[in-house]
Length: 310
Picture 1 (cartoon, one colour):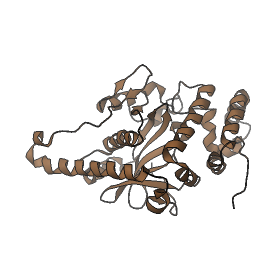
Picture 2: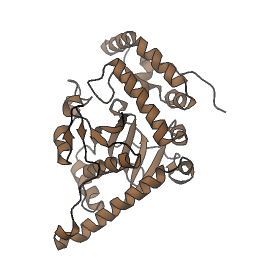
Picture 3: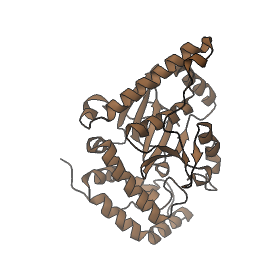
Picture 4: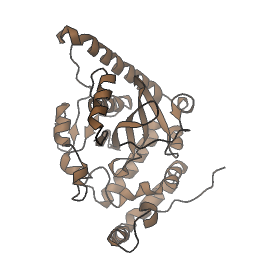
């Protein structure tokens, strides 16, 4: 039986487990908490108004810290972060369903949206990398559950906002990407992630998928700039997105496809398999989101801890 506990905003040691006290980082945290006390109180009230939200943040209290720091868009001040985070969780409750969100209390939880090819699967899971870039994640995983590629997102208005797209790092990164591309019938993993986001937004009946602009990406603070290995403006344009007045890159409602008749004969079989894989992904994605009741018995696994590979 679960204890009926009240969520309170995390202290410094909860957020920064190994950071020394009484240093600059501690001072910054203290000041942020002082100046954001009004928003902290409102967020605590919001979380404690729902047993589901209580469970999510009691298990991972550090996930509340983006309220004071950054959340998906560098333009947001503390008030806008409060509005964005509360709206995001309300939309997730509506779209994912209470059954799925209850399971997300366990950060090992994942909903398998589709099995793609050669042991690669597409998962929906709670962001286990950097919550400042969104509370939720779509990720490509291998048979052992290792993360190969991921896109993190939040619900902003009636759109799915992607705040980051990340792949493998290290010396073997290029070889890993080549191997995944071959397994996906010539489809680059980053292209698969964008396509999945477009179809996922459509399956949720949203107005579309949108992408963060380079200058609004939350990791582009002076200290973290070197960690961002891509230009998001160029990235979204590559997939036909247009920069709108809201400052976000709006992707087409449907991913572009080549007509098989226009593809040279030696590549036609590869493209046919690719499109069949994507069509199957869309069908399975819609099926997995159709009802809350299906989740526990069909697509959800919680027993195996996830290894962090990105």
